[in-house]
Image (cartoon, rainbow, N blue to C red; front, side):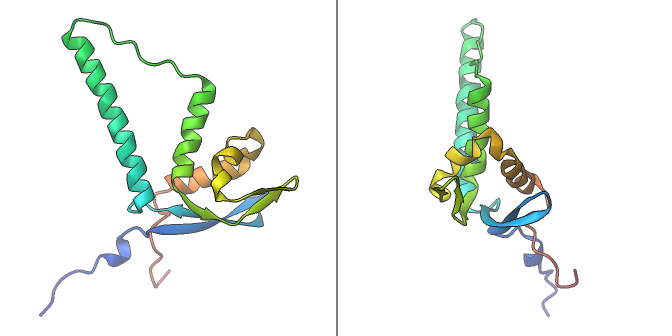
Length: 142
């Protein structure tokens, strides 16, 4: 007799699709995001871990050698680019859109999402990515 508990329904999905809204109105712009176990998410996580480990190694080296560790100074622009890079790393695909006659497919995600006027769309993607339930499949009873 198989008494195993089935947990497949509790595991995160590989991708999720969201539709960007403006003032509660769907825009038709759909964005496919990588879940936590997607290869894009794992690659970003591994790269961030390597960067963190390198920084930790530099700090430890400075301490061992009796030197002060001077952290890197980053500008607000660099911080914004880092944040956008994290979001873009989790985007698998999206519906191409036009703004002012310019076509933006997913290859131009960084270029588009860095723009301050696109903050309304950027924040929706970020909100989805940080939501705990975002990639959890809905149960058959909900």
